[in-house]
Length: 275
Image (cartoon, rainbow, N blue to C red; front, side, top):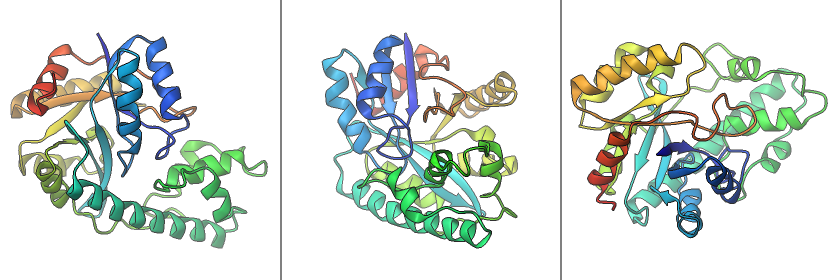
């Protein structure tokens, strides 16, 4: 059974609409999926009705940008339902903050001579969604003067020491864990192999019994990392999840391109009381 629990759409910073993601999932015979857009559940909510008509089960989800020890840490949240006032109010506030940070990044790029305008960024984003640094990449890719630039080079601009680096602030990791639980969801530490300071992972996982995204399409040494985090999840008795983290044309792994054991899905559904 093919499953993908980490997908993005145009509702946040993906290239495809919810409808297009569902069509791709159908083509690849995916039976269970989760739309985990950044800071919004609108894509997930749309997918529920669309997918059910097409014989695909959707587990409602979201991906949230948090911070711990000045490092950006991503948390996935999985729910039986995202119709929760606390959850939606928190996400609304984070969307505003994320968009504000992205605007500061654009200003830094302009100060460093990059001919990019905020209006170009907005055109690549959903009117009601969040604007993230990924939208800057889309705008650059659409700009004929800048389209020669590669993703790896652009992404380095937003790292510490980069020309557009803006430090993470607010949205403390442990607080987000708390309100995901309070909203009836299960928090899952996303793509742990991308965390720069690996020494903090034990602290992140020991706060409360959360999940760990074990199965993920890493660019470098994917199987080695998957094996490592699989052992870690087993040793700590954590929920294990996985997915492609598909965004669009620049994604390394296609929808459904990561193998996820059936037992992981069954355990997640049982926890969320999803049939």
